[in-house]
Image (cartoon, rainbow over all chains, first blue to last red; front, side, top):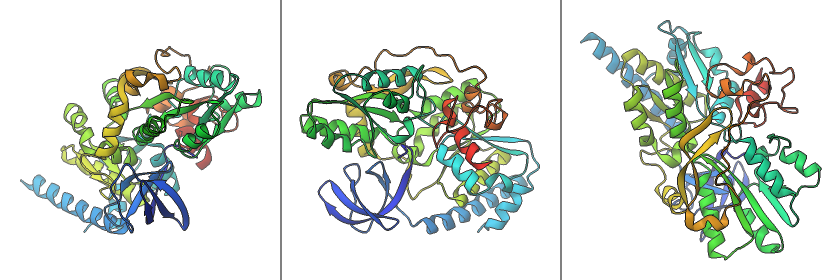
Length: 82
Length: 347
């Protein structure tokens, strides 16, 4: 019951301003009034409310992140040679 | 593509100028321990905690007001669990409960709505504490209060905003080279919120997620930026954070709240660093306005230095001696998001 913690979950059913979300195999009801979302979306839940819809798969994000680091490193190397 | 091994290798063998990186979110502090990030870094890269735990920076006069309200007849204070052990000038909410105060823990502020509807003879007060991640939920709560015409639920606010706090640190504290910006606050405010800070103070502001890989990559990004001298705002948590943040949430917050000065425990008053209910909604405020007052730290407690990144928690003379989560002297030891509490559990 901490106020800062937000956890990812998957929307499995929507009823008006509320949705059932699967958070690590626990099904819980959350408020979705702060976002536009649909069944199947991964969302970030904080204190019973969805605060954001996740745009990418986390694994995909981490791969992308490391690709970008290489691009940044290449750019820095080019800049230092100039 | 940069491999994780290469990143680890470069960070471990970094031998440039010393770099001090402040992580502003307690969840980052926890994740740094959980993933052993410090052991993967060169001694020249130091990670240090900042003022990102809302519980730790809530003033004792705010707790005093909650205690006072909890002890009034037919009153009930509702709160998140991590506020229970924070000391006011005399009592914490746990202690207030022990001496007859009416205090209940809720998982979500929205659960207070049904509670107030079910028992209309009791005046409920929600301890509305938090940063930008949590404030939209209090705005939703206000929406429900008005839509359902609830007259027995009020908010006592201590709602902090992160950018004025970072500005304060950049202005007043020397030696912090970069910031690991909070992932979930940034989901609401957006990565562009740090642009002015970056332009003014020429430091990297890198937003990170909470997995070990996220933090390691963000530290690598910060080190790369400092090496190249090109400091930027970089969003390394794009699955959740966008440039502009959650517009719906921001709009709702703006509808009910306005910027105000506030007292930060261990720091003092920071201009424009909080949100309070707008004038037209003050009937729903339980006495938040006008309670700013200077406070003294407990003798020997170095929470101020911890919050401002001057020392690590283990450098405080009270740490693990007279100050522990069960008997906390300073507020940083109380919350599971507080730097001292996290260090206590992990070292």
